[in-house]
Image (cartoon, rainbow over all chains, first blue to last red; front, side, top):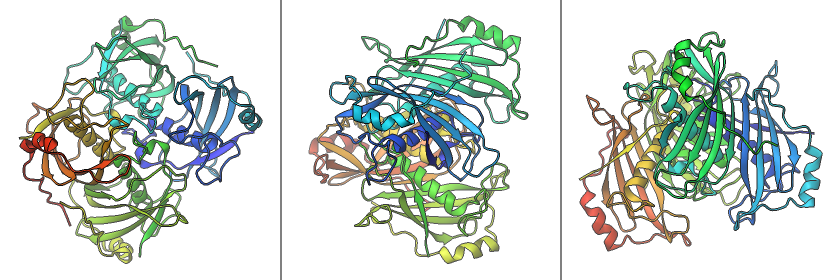
Length: 155
Length: 155
Length: 155
Length: 155
């Protein structure tokens, strides 16, 4: 089971080659991740969106690693990019979030632009120490666990 | 043998947690990579800086993959970050650029904030087809080839 | 008559004070302006969206000036910001685009966060010379001309 | 008397037209402003750099308005942009910072790319209320007060 998040591109995501810039790509993935896993202010959102990201929250999610494969350059288009997210692994204090970024819904043929993964470690805001993922978080997320994204371009 | 590039941070690199944002990190690495490998406009720069990145160049470098390990959050500081770069591998049409990002020169103890790698594929601007790395490029870069960065946080 | 464009914020728009960064504000206005005035790729959009922004277009719009008044800091929220746009003036080769940026639809009381204006000059891509705005462009845009935004914080 | 701040551009400042993006321009001005007016972490910097910008500071500077005139597009170049800053006006709780952004030192002819002004209001971090600029701040800044930047493109 995967989550689908639609993220509109911005003109400012594009660099002097008229492609989505490699660093902006991570901003777009970040936005998808926040919609998928952070508690919305208005109470409407994905079931999985239960982390508390407000400044002042006791536990924060720090990014430990990211890996991105850029499979095709993304040209400017106005329809939102279609991002599939799932969880590749739930560890003691960390989760691995996996992404596949596709052309907008309805565009054929469907193109896979990007594959990526982010490892997020839960830490106590004050001490910076890892915090065990609770059973209730685990229960909410487990339906979305599947095989981690398979990278093919590692050296 | 490694290259050293000093990159000043910007206030706008910091996010609402007052750390360098994970995506901005790639902008900073990008800047180091450009200084290390792209031909400067004024003719002064690293020996390795011989790629032609101008719009209109026949061959362009596309990013095929990136991997980043965030080892310690980077607080605001005004002295430039000290980035070591080297080449992990020269393939037929691609190179792997490796980075270690350290605290500014003179700060003790020296902190390793980030490890990263970027795979760059040379392609013909018009056709998008991979272009073989010439012997002369290879000769310039070979002194900077050493073991690829060793990642420790892969799942 | 005004145009309404809804722009979702991104987490990366926020700076270390947890407010939308002053520069990111212009990226958000830029996005609204593009949706309002540039021709969409799919043929669906505002009547006013008739400029051709593709690389290779004969005429491009260069920004000559911008003015922004930041009336209230924008906190993180997930519902899209509600941006009203209109045209303050159509000159020989330029238009002044005016903006008022409000809290998301349905939020009460409605807050005016930002007032802004952008002067856009049409120039020939090759020569860089100003290009007269055609009568047909003028006819499409005239219904959206009203008093320019009134700034109150000039020194 | 003016301050001179040199800011290196980044490749990511450039947009799909291969010019410094209009919003990135404000990030560059922000960086110059911080170097000119915020206290450096290491105790070395301009005399004028006495504001405390750390999270947790009692008084923070909020941006009330900005105005920018884009006089010439900025092409990619590796030498740092030369930014002149001065103070256009010191009010009760606010200052107006003025900028002129020039081509790198030594490049002839010298080009004026951008003129800009930022109004900064000092407010108490907790209450958000304006805070009077102290006589000691005023004394430090007064030598840098001259005529505000003269804008010529207002409608």
